[in-house]
Each structure stands twice: as structure tokens, then as C-alpha cells.
Length: 132
Image (cartoon, rainbow, N blue to C red):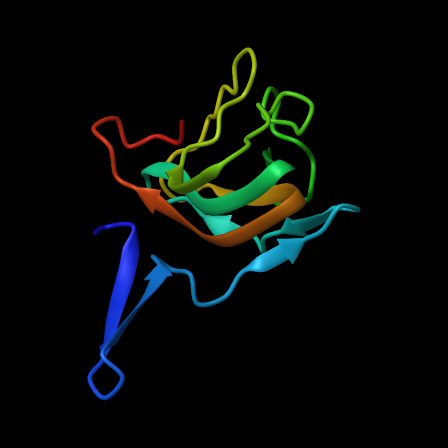
């Protein structure tokens, strides 16, 4: 399955599974936590996260300029709250997250987690080559 890695132990005849990119995660409990990336260079594609929350947990994404200012329309306040378990969650913002990102632009990502595991993120190429 594209959503899991599978291992088979011959001696015990046991099959073990692990979620894709699930070797390690940033975890936050009920009190929550946050993560901010280093400054990155945009090379195109749609931003996706491998994330899982508890039933009462949440995950939100904010985009920032290299100096830590929020990109207009892409703040935590504008971020739609994600609940659930997805290997490729594409964040959404209320209103317009008008990203002027072009190849070579510098930016940062800030994530807010509550009762959640954040495994990885990636930029998947799409036809438009923009972050959604």
C-alpha cells in the first residue's frame, strides 16, 4: 500500500507495518506545541504534510517571510484546522492565501499542533507549480 511500509520477519512469521515516513515524528500533547522551519527556497510544487491527530487534536499551518512575518492570508488565524490522519494533507486557508512564491523565493513554515504527530512535509509538483 502507498500508505504503509511492510516488513516480514521470517523466523516468527510476523508481518509488521509502519506508516509511510513514519519512523519518527514531532509529537504534541494536549498542551500543544509548535514547529517553525528554517528558511527554505521555493522550487515549485504543492505543500503536503504527513500528519495524524487524535480525535480532539488539531494541526494548522502558517507561511512566513524569511524574517518571520506572516504571509498575508496565510496566517494561523486563516488556516483551516485539520483533524484526522493523512499521508499527504495539503493545507488550506480561509479566504485567499495569495502566495507570490516563485522559484527561488525564500520562506518559512510554522505549524501548530495539539494532540498530533507531524511526520514529514514535501512539495509535490502539480500542473501549476504553485503552493496551494
